[in-house]
Image (cartoon, rainbow, N blue to C red; front, side):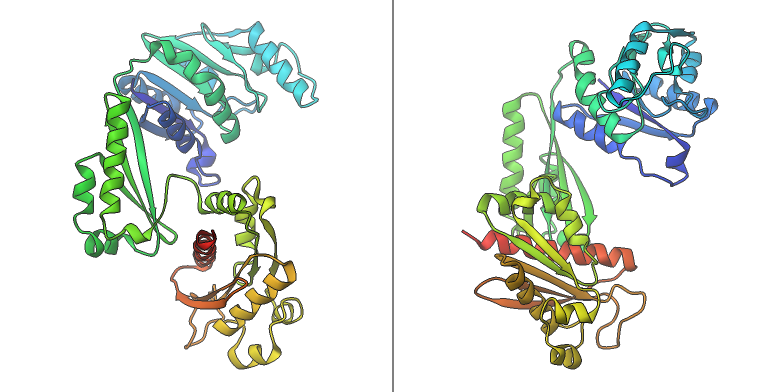
Length: 417
């Protein structure tokens, strides 16, 4: 079954928001050994939506739309789909019931039968929206299937999970299995990984599946998409990928197999090993803490942080000596060491990570230009700091500094029994 997505919304093409629904759909389909064949993003105009629908109906068996189901004038998905299919818009008692229940869930009064949520293209089935207000809907046209969901990523994602597979399962032709192995690497840029460290890696993996490479903040994510006719064949191909990586010179740079974020891996590992940790952040301004606390369960291992942006906080709260600051500066290995050790003692954690650097565009020196960062780490037995140099604008540098700090923490957690 070929599956296509029509993303509808001026705000996406205008750059006001990012499209998360393509990613959500691709990840969802992968769980069911399906894949997205085509995705098109269009503006909220009848002409553009018609053009997108025409392309998807021509190429795909299942057409999924996101966006345009709300109550405002630019929400025209229903009407435009109906006109494209040559159908009328009709009142649906079931759609009104779903919408009424949704409004009640949020302690709101449903406006009544005349509200747009009560109407659907002729012949379409209304779908429950367990995390929002607008009902979705599903139908069939000339052997093609159409699944329409709201554009809000949370609503779109839950509607996929709640409704999609149940609706199309009986219609699926199970011609094979599709899955991916993601190898997450660190420290090596893309050109060095494939050009110097292991020039044959791409060709070796290509014999097993479809290879892709994605440069990330502090390394490269290598993806291998696998196709097989049986589950046993799929498992065999996964094992072949791991065998290739195990024999590759890049193996020491592999930090994870899978799509989880580094903060998710850190929280899982720290909780499992019962290790506590915290951050002393300067140039990252709390970004490490923000990323970790975005993971459910982080409170079991993450104790807290000190955002020591000013030298007075470094001195008075973390205990960095005035002589250290005067002699070596706030951005130095010596200061990073004392920040990490001070935090570990103050919070009584097993591991403390410190970050101090120049994120720019000003503040650097000839000896320590913008992009210079010192990462400190302190455990009971040892405190040490390391110097690194990155390039980029302020936002990029803060992201790279935080990624490096989290990677340093992960490496330290892995050492614990």
